[in-house]
Length: 117
Image 1 (tube, rainbow, N blue to C red):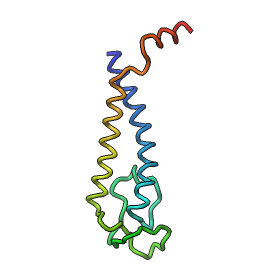
Image 2: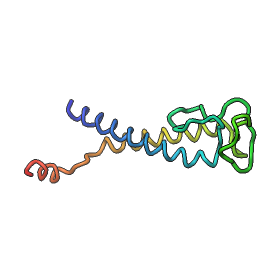
Image 3: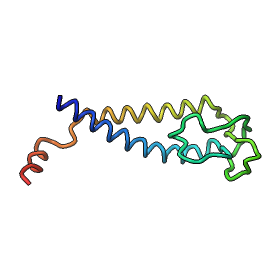
Image 4: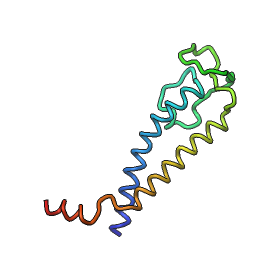
């Protein structure tokens, strides 16, 4: 039971860190892929809320446009592609979290040293 709790605690900690990392990384990647004129940020945490209504396909995404203009998405990309990219972020986060939770974070020697002081 204790090992299951350790696994769960490590998994939750790593998945939380991965959510933070992916949120910032999504912002960097998404800046070159699409522009929503009424976006409020943290798009990774609000999947599917990337483009609203009709949108234009453009060779270069420009930000800071008026809300009266349509949203834009980079040529060669579509909503399905954005969903695929987002899902890949989630899958990698889950994989890293499970992998990190499976392995001990401290070796037996380091645990003993920590207990001794």
